[in-house]
Length: 130
Image 1: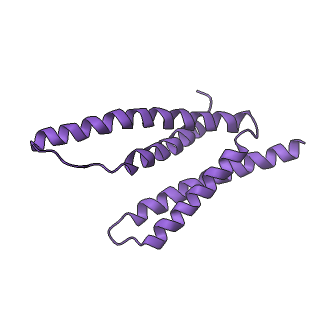
Image 2 (image 1 turned 180 degrees about the vertical axis):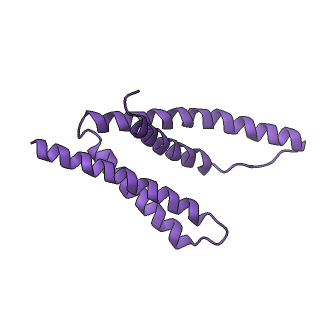
Image 3 (image 1 turned 120 degrees about the vertical axis):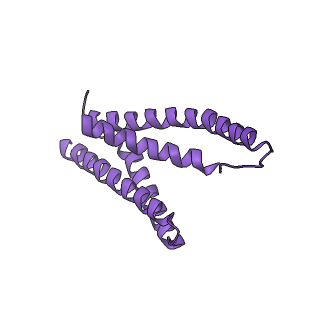
């Protein structure tokens, strides 16, 4: 039984690196010369890594704490984004003295929460139980 638990923990750890690699590929694809195929490949890596972590998050206490740290940071970032992005949009409209239909895309909040999840996960991994 312990062998199965260790295997799931290893899958979780590997999947976190796959998801991070997917985020890096997506960021690289956003460069002016980036291709759509590169962005799709990064998205596939991100989805595979995220689902693998989701299904193995309870492999042991350590992976569960890593998951909880990432989820907590992502939730906090999502709340701040929904309030903060609306404030920034209003500030931009006020400074421009005209109404802009939508200056910040809605995908920004989603992307920032995913990035925040990986930041929380890897910071917890680096700092340990502090």
